[in-house]
Image (cartoon, rainbow, N blue to C red; front, side, top):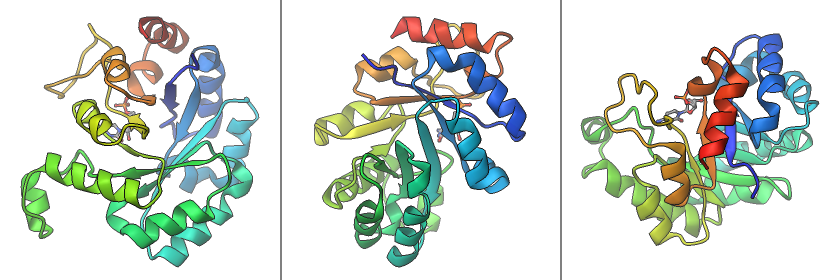
Length: 224
Ligand code: C5P
């Protein structure tokens, strides 16, 4: 089994990001580089991390007109990312063009609904109904648009897997059992998410803020 853990490298300094990735490399399947990292360090930063030999997930959350998103996708071909994110709310044509413009071997997954939004925020943007229904609707649209999968929370993975049997599902917001869940009330463990059908487990602070990140990653890996 390949290791499904992708470490979220939410570290602003390139040297610190490289040092952290080097430490945990034996215990993760890849690293996720997000907007802060990409805006700060660009292609150079991605190449520096790629030298470590780990698969790269570019969490760029693209959302623009189809032509622009397709152009952005082509501009990152040479970085050979294994996964890239776009927003499902960009619509079918945008997702189709994003997939068509992506490199062979890159999985394009859609962000459905940011977990920072609740049903009141949705209503303010003109979308009535609950968040779960909105996620399921956007998952269906992503599948119809030819994407590989979606990003979803540990609470949605089972339902989404039932609806989209061969989808590729990226699950963030996980907490190993016994660890502080901070302000999260309902936590899902990496093992639970894996059992429910997650393809990739995105884990950040439980590893990056641990006293010994390599040991923390190894301990999580051992639960899978
Ligand atoms: O909470 P943690 O540090 O493990 O988060 C890891 C990554 O997952 C971060 O890059 C964060 O932006 C992302 N995340 C997310 N949706 C959530 C929780 C975290 O995309 N609900």
